[in-house]
Image (tube, rainbow, N blue to C red):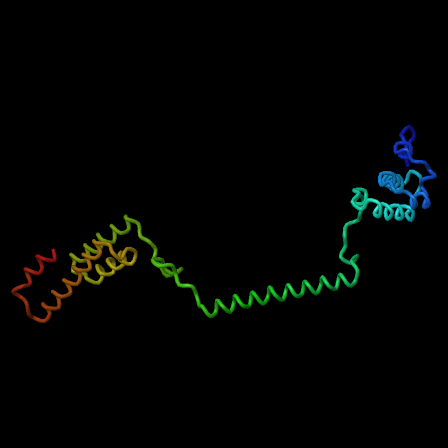
Length: 209
């Protein structure tokens, strides 16, 4: 209802009360006029007439189905509002689509099983198998310790430190040279323990140092 002093929609749209009628709407071919009647009926200014409003909306759908008025004040679409046959058809389509997606996933899984795990990229190590990289300070410390142990004739401890460097850097020249010295010391000790090579021992020691 419009308050006092406000222009009523009947006056604003130029519609008469007599036009709010089934007979008039049935004969009316002017979409604009029917749109105005619908707005008036929706406002409730002249009372609530749901059947007449529905009739006016159906008539407008015949005269001008593209009218924006038909899109106004529409309730949200609900799935259960669909006809039963259309609803069943949509459900069948969804089930077929779901089965197709599952079949494709199963095919991909089977393919991965057949192919087996993907090998690591050349030059890279498997996750968890690569030794931690040593900093330059750690490498220098290990090399120095190995040299000290070698001078003390502790071949085992020297070898452990050279190998640790080589685990992080297989081509490290200092560690490779150190391992060569370790092997030379081992050969020298073996010859001395066998009682041979006494005449050559001093020369070998000089070469190692």
